Image (cartoon, rainbow, N blue to C red; front, side):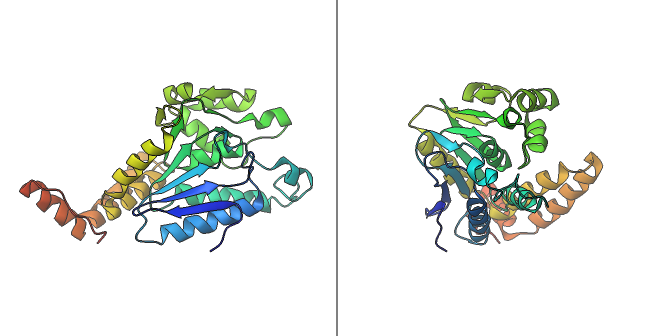
Amino acid sequence: MPYECLIVDKKDTYAVVTLNRPPANAISSKLMEELDAAIDELDDDAAVRCIVLTGSGDRFFSAGADIKEMSKGGGVVGDKTRGTLRRHQAVTTRIDRCYKPVIAALNGMALGGGCELALACHMRIAAEDVTLGQPEVNLGIIPGYGGTQRLPRLVGKAKGLEMALLGTLVSAREALDIGLVNRVVPNGQLMAEVDKLARKLAKQPPIAVRLILDAVSRGLDTTLEQGLGIEAENFGEAIASEDAREGITAFIEKREPKFKGR
C-alpha cells in the first residue's frame, strides 16, 4: 500500500521502514496508523525475515509526538476517551510482539514517543552521537506509548524513574552502559552495521526465531514457572519442525544449514 509518512524498502531478506515526516519525524496519528499497517504487511511476507525501523535524515530518529496535533485536540492529549492513546500503545505492542526481529536503527535523537518506538523494538543500534530520553515530564505530561513500562524493564526501576521524572537525556554510550541500546557504532556506519545484523538474523531459522520472540515476550509478563511452561511448549513446536531436522543434520554433517521456515 502507498504510505504518506513512511518509506518501506524491501531488500532481499529484510525490509527497512523509515519514518518520513521531516524535519523531526514527529509521530502523528497518521504515521502510527501507517506503521501498524506496514508491520502487518511485513510480518505476513515470507520473504521478509527481519524488519529495520529508522528515521529519515541524520538528526532525528523521531523527536516524539506531534505537539501541534496534540494541541489541536487531534492527538493523544486532546482525546478525552483515551482511545487515540490506546491505539498508539497498540502499535508499539504490535512491534514488540512481531513474529520477526525488529531492529531500531537510531540515526538521530530518539525522544519521547520516538524513544518509546525504539523501546518496542527487539534490538536497538545507535550511532555514537545519538541521544535518547523521555522528556515528557517537562511538558507536564507523562510517557504514553509504553515508556513507563518498557523503560524500567530494560534499564531497571531506579534508572527508569530517574529518566522519566527528571526528563533526563542520555548519550548513546550511556544508553549502552545501562542496557538501553545493544550496540553503538561510529557515525556514518550505522546502516552498514544494521545491514550486517539484519542479514545475519534473516539467516536464522524462522520458526525458532518466532518461538524465541514469543517465549520471551509472553514469559516476561508472567512468573518464572509459567514462563518455563511457555518455553517447553515452544520447544516442542520447534523440535518438530523441518528446520530443526535440517539444523541437526547440518551440524552432524559439518555444513551450513539451509532453513526454509517449515
